[in-house]
Length: 474
Ligand SMILES: Cc1cc2nc3c(=O)[nH]c(=O)nc-3n(C[C@H](O)[C@H](O)[C@H](O)COP(=O)(O)OP(=O)(O)OC[C@H]3O[C@@H](n4cnc5c(N)ncnc54)[C@H](O)[C@@H]3O)c2cc1C
Image (cartoon, rainbow, N blue to C red; front, top):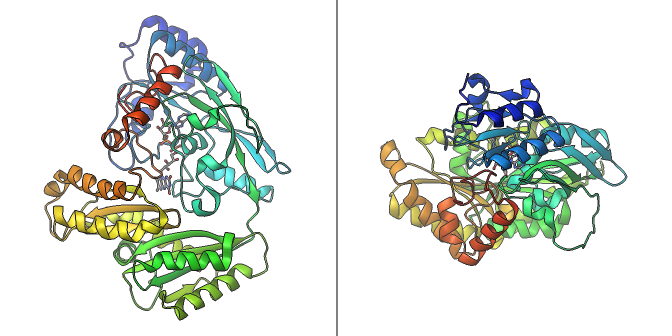
């Protein structure tokens, strides 16, 4: 059991009148799993976790914390990649018990949910109403809608449907002083002054607690076709993307880069992953077409497009999945790269975005840059290149000393982000800034941008109780 001595006695007494005893958690066994992140960036500390069950409770907690100037860290599923939900002594406000569906409205193509709702639950609910919610990320069985909104999550469907920001119509937010802003509108059009919802999206819990959200739904997807294709070379990934778009327009729903080294990782360490083509090539892509009719069109269109790409010399070989099992087996390659890449002796990760047409040049220049820092370093560049997002990770050369490799982290980060910056890119495409990329905020954002952010923060959170030390130092 943790000690609460650091908090004023009256604060704790008042807190206990707001929240049910079972949601006032000091038990280390329950808190400890909430103190580390899956990437291994942070080991946090906290002696108290609160798990509110409704918006009113969140409001009362924030009002009290604000009065006593006691900081809190909002937390959803704790699947974030930049340690944004990890406390450094603050109270954890864990939202996972606020997990109800408030309303589904198939006619309006909307669903309104509590912020602690698990993403997968929203997928399942949408399907039951013959609708579709497109945000698709590897952590969807654990991450929450509040976390997805606060990180503006991306994933494999952004090129067709946009980021989480594009999927939110309205928000309910509890401000640091406890005031509740009900912006839960179901409107597609609402030009009534500043778009306040956007300030809280991607804010990583530094401005308020998102307690509810109204999300956009889409027509049900009745047909999907997945293919694995080997590219002539890295440049041809852009030629192929152009061809697929001109052949199939909006039915292209995913376009993921898979390097030969990544495929090797998946085959060597993944669970029964089958080599998709008869030969292994240096650059490959996973392509998915999807449609709302069950008429075989997605397969026909993808076959035609790939035939054209072979005729034009853009791709060298391709396979189209003939069953859901085969499609799942292709997607397993993508997931296995994320999971097993550290087996190559460690990894230094980057979540970079550049304009789509610059992806090949970015990868080539970043490869040159990291090889200048560590000759024979092994880049594993993969990911959502259909929207310009490259997970540009690097593994050490064979038999390289692990400590020496880790010591180079900052230098490697700098050369990679410098190349992205040169192309007008971003050092944080979809994972956010959290604690991990605060230095890059200062290095790559203009003073004007940082000062505006600080002004917004100070005007909403005067006592700086919301997720201190995240995004930038207070
Ligand atoms: C295997 C795996 C694959 C992943 N793939 C992707 C991917 O493809 N694309 C992608 O974008 N991300 C991906 N991620 C990262 C992660 O899943 C997302 O960032 C996700 O959106 C985080 O949701 P969460 O509920 O776990 O949030 P948490 O990790 O709990 O929190 C993330 C941030 O949001 C804040 N926050 C959480 N809830 C609230 C709230 N209700 N109100 C205010 N602030 C809040 C926290 O303070 C923190 O700053 C992946 C992670 C894993 C483990």
